[in-house]
Length: 433
Ligand code: URA
Image (cartoon, rainbow, N blue to C red; front, top):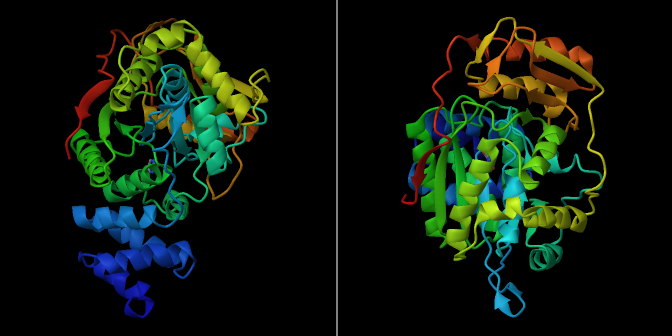
């Protein structure tokens, strides 16, 4: 097959607005995964796709080729106590302060379903679940398929590095992150769905973010992304429900790895910021409906400590120490209000970029992240604030990062005379392609 295709010709086809034939897509994904296409060539093709798009059939074939690039897990025979154990997962398209996966998997486990979740690292200005979990001492995201299955039976949740699931996505994801080609509808849809189809969950709930801190800023485009992913799931017999949720404002009061884990522990202890609790409970309800579990109240598992028990059990099963203190950055700077008033909107992108500048994310492939770096938001939009009071605390191990982080945050918030109009967190629910 390889003699039929070459990268320069296919890059030219897409650059000039043409369609990639099915077999050419299969060849491109296979050849890139095993190193026969150079990063420079794939980067050019990704930019052509970013600018020209892919139609529904191209996107479906690209997704299938990525899913087929590695191993596929299958939990259809999973049982607990002799009864079938339903599996269901959720995936977010990426946001700022988006720590929802952590309480959510624990809630679902406490309600009697199981969550096999292949997770990623930070992408651009957005945080990654694995980076957050690795701020817990000892936590290991590398699990074999047998260990995943055992952990799903024993604990009800496993969060693991994709490893040999959809390895094409791992390579493409890293390349997109450093070539300005993340925010492409077919590339996001195929990236998310190839991983999720390969991980083998029986059903999927998608949290499609829309707003300044999301990869999709336009609600119409976000809805189109959601419909595309629902359709890709349907084509592979995986039921998918998508919620469109607001990402103009960071979620909760923290952004940055260990800071977010600390906030998750508050949520699991029955407290925490209302928006984090609301989104967790709402996504949990959708997941339980798809898993066929009736009569369980997700909010109750946060109030009665059963979700906290599942979270601690998952951390311990993956080598983490739930008792270990979380890392704290060596330096803290505080931003204070210069006047009395009401906190106005806080731009999620400004916070995401500032957190990234503080060292919580990467600027090159494979770089380590600072687990203690990030931002605490002391005043959320609509909360009263007095002159001189702290509005944000910025944490980092490397204080020479402060000027760049402060510059990102500047202009991303304000204090006004009246409360800003607060947007609904849940914008839409999409179940049809
Ligand atoms: N999440 C993913 O898994 N892939 C993307 O491209 C964006 C968000």
